[in-house]
Amino acid sequence: MSSRTEPSFRESVDLMFNRAVSLMDLPPGLEEKIRVCNATYTVRFGVRLRGAMHTFTGYRSVHSEHMEPVKGGIRYATGVNQDEVEALAALMTYKCALVEAPFGGSKGGLCIDPREYEEHELELITRRFAYELAKRDLIHPSQNVPAPDMGTGEREMAWIADQYARMNTTDINARACVTGKPLNAGGIAGRIEATGRGVQYALQEFFRHEEDKAAAGLSGKLDGKRIIVQGLGNVGYHAAKFLSEEDGARITGIIERDGGLFNEDGLDVEAVRNWIVKHDGVSGYPDAQYVENGALLLEEECDILIPAALEGVINLSNAERVKAPLIIEAANGPVTAGADEILRKKGCVIIPDMYANAGGVTVSYFEWVKNLSHIRFGRMQRRQEEARHQLVIDELQRLDDVMGETWSMSPDFKQKYLKGAGELELVRSGLDDTMRVAYQSMREVWHSREEVTDLRTAAYLVSIDKVAKSYHAKGL
Ligand code: NAD
Image (cartoon, rainbow, N blue to C red; front, side, top):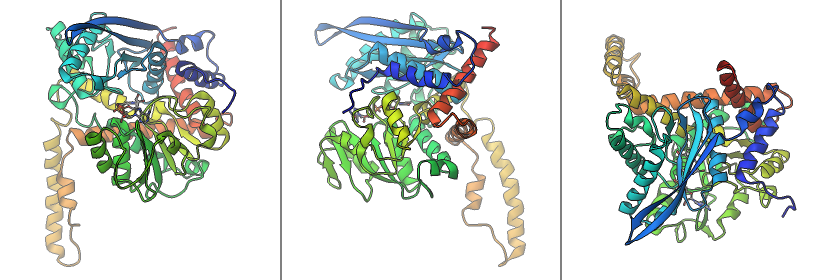
């Protein structure tokens, strides 16, 4: 164990920010203006449950309002505190800037273990929390738009949207007050999978660049690569599922709250997920070796490590023993500033959180636009696109008929080409494009500036520059 002390999550984010900003030439004072959190609201409210009054503590932090609305998830966990929401809000500012989602950064949290409450109790608590935030415009379609995070999902977002609509009965844009809603309550196709899907697109893009793979000592394709995932929740499950089912990667390790599973031949993600749902943990799962201290699997040999649960899991106490040559931060802040330094020295490549998990906010942005435009994506174009494709198919069919044996259309071409893009296809396409463009903006800085030796610093440089430019445009 190192004698160095670990900074808090917020300090860790600030240290990484400072490292990047030291390579920039910002006007005096602007650096501090960008770094500091504008405001954090703490609320304590009571809800009558099980015959007694229970008091809950929640937060909503606004890091930067250089663009509005500000955006960021709401987390339900017992460890939620001011330092954590401020760190997460800051990451949201940089994340939105990096992927060009036109938002400032915010984050919220409630100190609660959602597993201890019945559904109707959680609804009462969520509605009351939403009421407290909405009455201060900390939930508002044009000022502050939450989304799901750890411990929350579609269900909570639907309650929040409904609570806001009840308080703002004439607001035609009320649904845009929160994203991550179910489809039937103003949500968008592909939002649940979005963050995990974004992790997949990020890795696909990384693997398109020989130079980048070489920096991590990797080569070839994603196919067959050994992956260890921590946290099989929303983000980890979707990332592991898509990478194994679509890219041929092998999920050799899965770490959950109650321990870890390891199987060199690859785990069946769907089967593990079903096991967790049924047994409330991974313990007892038949087709793998069970490791009681799951965190030890973070140190196991693999090609790619995906921490997708909590912050600070790779820290001064274990970084030296982490063997993965490539880490993609699906969770926010899984690698502390000190661990980041140790891993960089070892030659490990880290795809940073502000980029790696930006798929969620990207699709949230699409959902917000959908809510404001009051129309589903693809509704106007789909059939027209299909009609135009039919023209091409008809011509090819004529050719097919006259060519006889010498040429014919490939078997499934007709069916694939005829299908116009629906909302899900458009969302995935927009997300893929966003992840590719953002990666390229980071790698350009990484490879073109000698003093920039890692993707995280590159990501900060790109995003801080964008935030600085929007302050400049405002005359600040
Ligand atoms: P989630 O609640 O759906 O899943 C978290 C998973 O981690 C659960 O399966 C939980 O059992 C597991 N877990 C908790 N403590 C653990 C521990 N000590 N060791 C191993 N596993 C543990 O949450 P999520 O939405 O998937 O979020 C995970 C991370 O991704 C968080 O850092 C969150 O901020 C980040 N993130 C989420 C989204 C999103 O769209 N949901 C977007 C961006 C970033």
